[in-house]
Image (cartoon, rainbow, N blue to C red; front, side, top):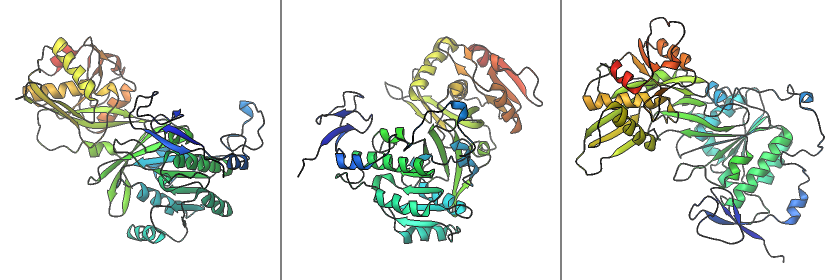
Length: 455
C-alpha cells in the first residue's frame, strides 16, 4: 500500500510547509497550520482538464473575437442581490456567500431558488439539513415548491454526476464545509477537503456554464472558514451580516470579478423570510422627534449608490487614568487619529474624556468621508449642544486640519436633499457648481471653518 503524502497549509494565507510549526512564517499567524492529504497521482490523472476553468480544447483568440452575447446575465429575482452581484448572475460563475449562524444564508438562497425554479431548472443541494427540514422551511415561508429540485448529498463527485444528468441552470451547495472528495482521506471541513471540493465544484460550474452559489461558514473572528485559496478560486465573495436578534441584514460584496466590490444590499428579516429594502436610508435615519447632542447624519457611498447613515457620539468625563476610546462600526485607530487632529487644529481637548462612537443600524463604515461627521458629533456631545436636524455632513479630514474632497460629492448632496435635509457642510472642492433646490451648502476647507459654521 502506497504511503499517503501529506502537506501542511496555513488556513489564513494558504502557504504550504513540509512540516508542522506553530507560527506561519508568511503571514505571522499562530496555530493556523493544519495537515492535509495530497491528492494521489491516480486521481490527478483522471482529471482530463488542461486549465483551471476546465477548458479541454484551448485555442488562442483575439480579445475582440470573443462572443459576449453567448453568456448573458440573468436576474436572481431579488434586485438587492442583483445589485451586489453587479447586475445579475453570470452563467458559470461560482459565488460564495458567508455569514454568521442565523444570519439567513440558507433562507435567502432557498427563496431565490424557489422563485427561479418557476422559469429555470434549479437544483438545491443540502448537506447540513435533511430534505424534510428544507421542505418545512419552504412551507413556513409560503414559497412555491413544485419546481425546485432537491438533493441531500455530501460527496462532490456524486453531486456533479447527478447534476450533469439534469443540467440545471443554477445550483446551490449548502455548505462547502460538509462536502468531501473521495480521493482525499481527511475529514470534511478540513483544509484539504474544502480546498479540493471548492476547486472541483468551480471547475464543474465553468465547464457546464452552471451558476453556482456556495455557502460558507465563518470563524469566531468573522472571517470565512477554510483556506485562503477558497476565496481565490471563486468569482464572487459575499458576506451576509447582521445580528441574529436584529431585523435587518446587509449583504456586502468583498470580491466580484463581474462587477464593483463593496456593493451593499439591505434585507429585512420577516416571518416570510428576507424582504428587500428599496430605500435603506429611511431605515438608518429613523431618529426621534427631539434633537439630542452627539448625533449627526453623514452620506457614505456604498458601491454605486449613496446611503444616509446616522452616527452617534458620547463624550463623558473619565474616571480612569486611561480614558476609553470605543468605536462600533468605525475604525478605532482612525478615531484616535481624529481626536489628535481635533486637539491640534480645533483647540478642543478630550484627553480626560471617554469617547464612545456608534454607527446606527449596524452598518460598518470604511471610507474616510465619515471623518467630518464624526468630529462634529463628538463636539456636539462634548459641548452638550445639538446639531440641526436638517444638517448633513461629509468630508475627509487630513492630519494638517484640512478638509479633503470625497468622490461623488454632488450626488451625495442631491440624495440628502431628497430626504428633506436643508443644510450641508461639505468640503470646498465638493461644492456643487449649480445651486440645489432647497439645499444650503456650506463649503469648508479647514477644520476651523467647519467649527465656525456650527456657531
